[in-house]
Length: 201
Length: 383
Image (cartoon, rainbow over the protein chains, first blue to last red):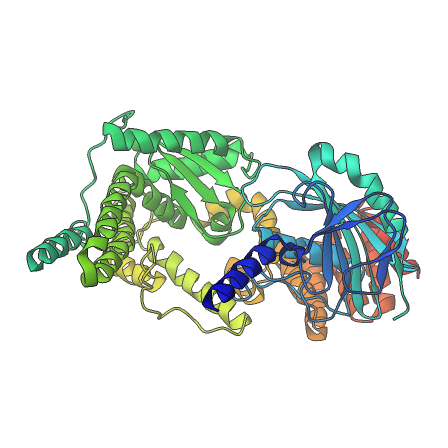
């Protein structure tokens, strides 16, 4: 009996190591609308993406092509007032700013910048361009940014489209190293943002 | 067994007491000192490689004039001959820190330049870091750590006593580090005493650091750590310790020049950039305290603008009203400050004062038509 129990435990250990439940990664197939970030937000990708099991926060989700260090697509599906953009590194020593319903669209780039500066421990972050766009059928902000992580000499670029609907923040960002990856994959990201829809809340 | 334990205890006691705590005399100076022995040559080799990477880092502030200014303060503090063994690298990091490697590479972070308020205070920090270099603390620390880790590893053979011995050995590493910091503080004070700068400045830094930490803690609804005991893993004495013994030792020294006006003048152009980094750290209490300190001799337009940004970013209705007042005060001092119109407009718009907000934004766009967010702001006020 003890032998059986031990065998079962070993089997469970092996299965749990191999099972995607631990990682939770999944392949996203192109051409069909996919619900993202546990929200009413859907997108229709034009190519295969890998959805990562590890989420940046409760209402968010990350997709990638070659690994999130090389090309990371982040969906934020309705960040509520009083919540941070993503999970805090240290609530005590490095608390992140909180989203607020009263924020203007121009406050969103600052909100993202401050969150990144604190979480990544970097002072090299700049918002390079901000422009008005339509997103999810409403007025939105599109902005481009560049940054480096703490003491890391890889230059990274980011592109984000965001809006506030019903007092919640909806945003899609794409980030990649400036060299090669950003230019290669940016069009695919822009196409994806164009397909974004929000189910009636 | 008892004998062996006693021998280990003696070894640990030796580790825990790294030397006299009295102020060391200025060590003999050797021009173009070269590392001696295997250990020192090894750590210099690693430090040389780190410096090569640091030299090309994008976090470096590429302002030779600022670097030369800081170097000149170091030279006035420790002497013209000695300071030539040091290369100074100023990094864009929004925290109060500086460090020194065994081969003479000194890193200064921009958060430190934002916080010190005179040449004398900067001299105290530079002297402290230089003392680590001159006393060859890197080498001594490396050797101590190796010996302590050896004891910790062999403690496994001591049975029931092993845990206590291992804990003692590990603790001695941190105690040794704290003692080195204290020695560097004391030697720094010696440099200051024979420099043109006021020795009292050293204690002032730590007093303000404690007050800023308290303000940060209060802003985050946390307790002050000012009177906390020295934590087991602390590498430095507490700020209170440092402020106390530095003030005591400098009490009878005649006050000399602080160099505060010269400092503000030379770092002034960078202060706005460093403040912008600080504002983005989500530290309302600490930043508010820091702004108050920087404005000790009066609120300039830059400082008022920064205070407006701080309040606008926190964004409570009362903050938005206060922010608008700060922006207006900044504009009263300097009418051609486009960013203040932008901040004022956004604070008013967010506080539902649309007409006035739109007017301020229009003013901003008129002053800065090529602003990167011009299209976005135009759309917002045309809605």
